[in-house]
Image 1 (tube, rainbow, N blue to C red):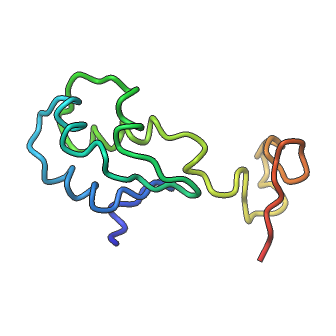
Image 2 (cartoon, rainbow, N blue to C red; image 1 turned 30 degrees about the vertical axis):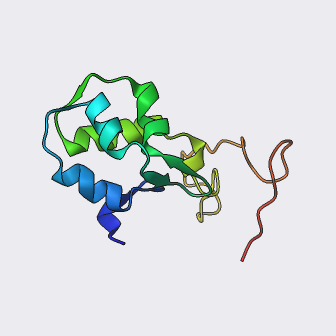
Length: 114
């Protein structure tokens, strides 16, 4: 699969290519009718294009880039792999790291290191 259909933890797969080849401008309803059931994969979750785009409630899209931006706006934490992960230790000078979501905090599942 092409890297151009993967961005910020979101894998569009063939949907990315279809969106690039689609004629614009296009209404959200037309996009949902044509591609609503296409799968969008994130780090640990798969959803449909419809589930992501429908709540955005945009009347019209002028380009594939605008559709991709809407998708990126609508994905949540599902697209993030290990939250607050950084392979830089200790923090860089002036960097203020958040502790939220760090391993060992309540409500967080442990992740195995390899």
